[in-house]
Image (cartoon, rainbow, N blue to C red; front, side):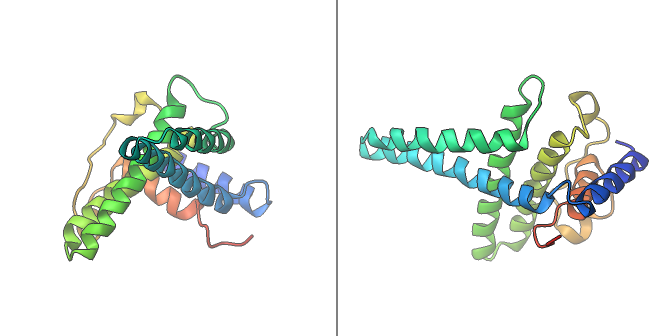
Length: 177
């Protein structure tokens, strides 16, 4: 996506948020909630398997219904498997964030930073798909996935970092409009 197109989209998003027609802070909170529901589904599955108690599958199904309903608020129209791609982007982002946090706790700050970068890239790609900013046709253009910590990754721009910049500017859970 060209820089000019991203700027236009950012201006449009800012106008919609100022006019209270778009509440991205609630959407960000909802996306994090969906991430956690996906994790709950996974934990219920593993608990059912480890304990042999099928009642956990009943709970899993109820959580899945809730997650599906809430995903419907985020992904209203989609083609192909964008719904599932979006779900897995959120899930993978959450998992990489968790592994990064564990690495940070073990004193592996460089590894943690690389994992956090990947997590944020996936989260930004979720938003890019949600906002129809990218298609499979444009995804291959100029992607370089950086695994370097924050200070050195600013040296080059790639599609992930451009999406990330847009998400930083547009999605802010701490703004109360």
